[in-house]
Length: 259
Image (cartoon, rainbow, N blue to C red):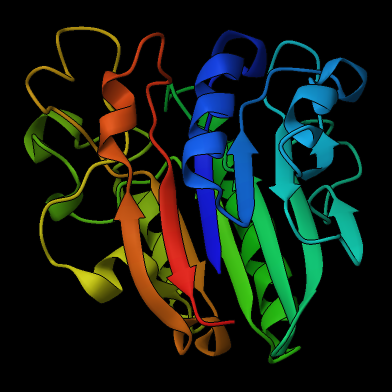
């Protein structure tokens, strides 16, 4: 089974890129972030024509997440518990039946947090606290659980082309990384780092020739419960997609599993 995450950076702007990639690669489950669309405006028909079931948790102009799956959904959950006042659409979870049993796939778009001297950064940290509590509850099920998406976090110096330039950014500063360590220490495995120690990037900014210079960062992650990590066969970062016409600034990151 192939499960992928991709910050699409606007579903309408990237629809042709998405449809081309889906038709070419045919992954089983694709989790999209930053769809920037309300549910009613999401281009469901075009994606369903390729055989995908579609579930969304959208928001006008900003944020928004979606799961596309060749496998029917057993359950769908929307929103991160813990703050009824939080109206940002940043989490959607699907449960699926496969030959080995049930798998749980949770798609997140974690807050960016910049500028770090504004309320956006404390919001990011509070959101991560809620995510840690949510993940702890999910891990108690002791089932294959894939927590994936745009985490807006650079885990290590090996995940950024210029650590000194990025240090202090909300994506790469002590408070953010401490929360990420707490999340990882619940027992999650970073899929990319389970298969390679090589510098690996998933995002290249549209500005300053970042793509041409390979000035990237790795902020799109697949974090796996022990039951999912045991089934991991490999990971592919589809770097070539960044060079396509009208691409997102992120690329798909795919895990291959023997579910």
